Image 1: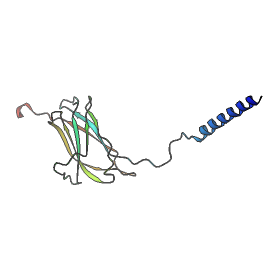
Image 2 (image 1 turned 90 degrees about the horizontal axis):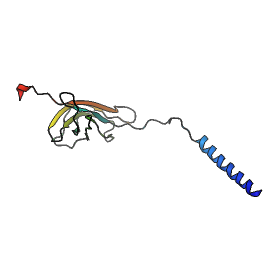
Image 3 (image 1 turned 180 degrees about the vertical axis):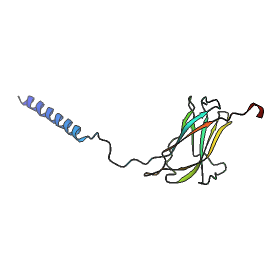
Length: 148
């Protein structure tokens, strides 16, 4: 008889513990402020015909708000394109709250330039404002047959 009471008591303790955990865990979304965002550059690299370019290197450089870039400065962020020509740079937090001019350049695996977009003014986000991401489509220039 003593042994069955012990099993019942142990069972009740387990049930009570499960109830406390179940009632104490809140599955509602967090009411805390959103986490600080970060700037991501993303997009596609395409041939002049519109077909995707795989394994292209995309380099993002930053300059002053008036688009002055340091000569030979390392890229701010880099990425490679997938089979569908899409790229996405890792999130960057180091410049939060600042404004900069972005240069996004794509290069073939051989190092040959594909396209460059320069002059996009971006404001890096801080925890309360700013862009979250910037998208680009870089298309290889189609050279007229007489210009070669």
